[in-house]
Amino acid sequence: MYEFDARVRYSETDETQNITITALVNYLQDCSTFHSADVGLTVDYLNEIHRAWLLSYWDIYIERMPRLYENISIGTSPHEFRGVLAHRNFWVKDKAGNFLLKADSLWFNFDTERMRPVKIEANMIDPFGGINDVLKLPVSDRRVTAPEELTTGEAIKIEQHHIDTNHHVNNAQYIRIADDVLTKATEGKVHFTSGRIRAEYRKAAVLGDIMFPRYGQTENGSVVVSLQNEAGEVYCNIEFS
Image (cartoon, rainbow, N blue to C red; front, side, top):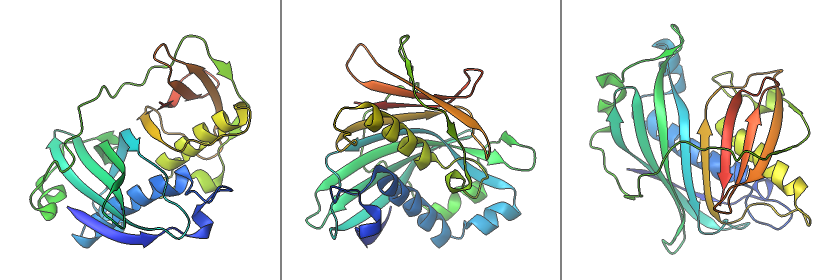
């Protein structure tokens, strides 16, 4: 288990003084990156051994968004390694210890030299020591399926600010793009503030790609944004409920 403390900055908030969804998910990424670095698995070390952790699935439960100036703690704990896959819990708490966010995530170990997923070796696991399913969240179907009837939004060109150290669109950026698409389509321009977000990553978007957002409502009332290329191949499906 690993935690660090933070305070919500003005630069991380929107016009309502709530933290943005991008900043919130970035805190989760930062937490796992700090955890890995503090046990010796830095980005530089992973580059040297031609390894990377790539995200396959988010399942995020948000009770409420942290507010400007609020003191929060962000935590993470890996809780299962199997084959090429690894599960990680994440959480955000307020100053009193109340959970503002709980999340589970699924990652795969990737060989950046051979460009394929590979079995997780001991040197990628042992530095973390014992593993613990801290949150015990329910197991969910990691497939996010878009409804048949979809509305197409404006095309989006992938720019440099979308890209991370893996030379792909960063996972938080997909969620931000999806939230912006729905906000623009919603009368009153309402950003996502609470509920559940599931994101399934299928194909990595890279610099210069053109992304076509398509969105629609499912039978259970949630909304799915499907970020696709021109051929209809899915980069990522994001469900808000």
